[in-house]
Length: 235
Ligand SMILES: [Zn+2]
Image (cartoon, rainbow, N blue to C red):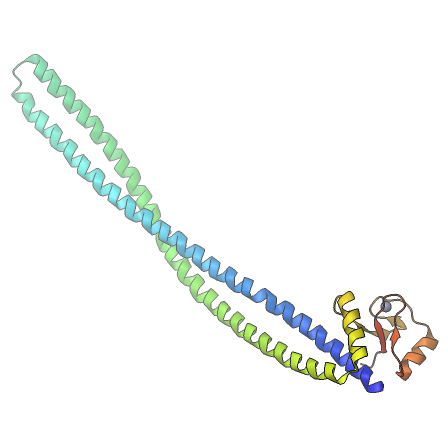
């Protein structure tokens, strides 16, 4: 019977370790995803800025073409002004020139705004490119470390699972069933060592006489308050 208690305790320790390891392993994919997402978002913003920059340069060129067209019209009407036959024609040409000058001014204003915006976008694109490169070098390293940690955790879990199978097989079937039942009810902690004359699972006091009995390890004692299997702490 005595060896069963040390096996029970080993089982409990292995299960606790497995729980901790599984808890750590569980967090890794989300952490990797989050790092990849940050890189992806920075890259996407950079691409959008580059796209806006291309669009702005295109708009500027178009405005430049419009500007030249307006200037050509102004020049054309200015020449025609001298060949006006009547006062009405003269006024009409003058009016056209005025209209084209207004158009030209509006285009020039738009070009100034486009130029300023292009400048700002250009700076943003440069900063974005640097940020993407920084995030990539920084986060890809972190991702590699996380992937290595993930592999280590998987190996550690497999190793403990193999040991757990051995320990579980060495326990009498009834005791193992009881262990599993209590474990399921007690959030993974089925075996409670007695510390300072208390059940370490629920902190209920255990009478001194009972501790002496438990210490003989000739049968299984259950904490009356929480139902865990009591063992005398050996560590
Ligand atoms: Zn208890």
